[in-house]
Image (tube, rainbow, N blue to C red):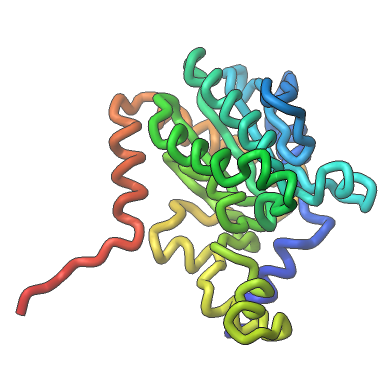
Amino acid sequence: MSEKAYDRVKLARESTRPTGLDYIKNIFRSFIEFHGDRRYADDSAIVGGIAELNSNPVTVIAIEKGHTAKERQVRNFGAPHPEGYRKALRLMKQAEKFGRPIICFIDTSGAYCGVGAEERGQGQAIAENLMEMSTLCVPIVSILIGEGGSGGALALAVADRVWMLQNSVYSVISPEGCASILWKDSAKADIAAQSLKLTAEDAKSLGVIERILSEKDLGKKEFYLRIRKLLSDELSVLSQDLDLVSKRYDRFRKIGATVTVKE
């Protein structure tokens, strides 16, 4: 069982998996990318802008890893700086202003943990996203397409609907990091992976996500058409809901809740 969980981690990290930009290019039309957080810089690890989903305007935000070694270096291996999260929040607030639904594609081992990022407020940037996303008055759908690591992933996942591809993972820490802390041995990552309950099936059973997406025809035209239809149908329903914010609040409040039974 432990090998199965860690096998999912390996699949989620495959460089051949479609990245955020692949989803943007194949699902949406007329994508216009916006840059910068209006405070410090533009973070290439997060791509965001306006696009059309079946002729309807939406705001799309994706964590981008890249495929080749050069692309991954440019994208900081999908590890966003605080500027990336601030850019994402700027675009989300803009989406709320103009009534556009928000779609996020998440694929990161975690937010960048370098000294510079911490000096520029990495923790605060993530915390602000969590707080602000919980109150946005437009529909939000977030999809984990690869790795979903810690607060770096959660900063784009406070959504009305959270979906995972069947071979993606979602965890508070990487298996290697967990093993290093608990057993001082990263080689025990396979044991940690099982304990972390990081697979899509685990997340679904715990109520952390609503849907597991099949990876049949992954990266092919049929795959993207299927995702496009699911997104379109889901946003059609969410756009009619006049009580989005309170339902989103309730969604996250009930995760991990326990019931005390009196004898």
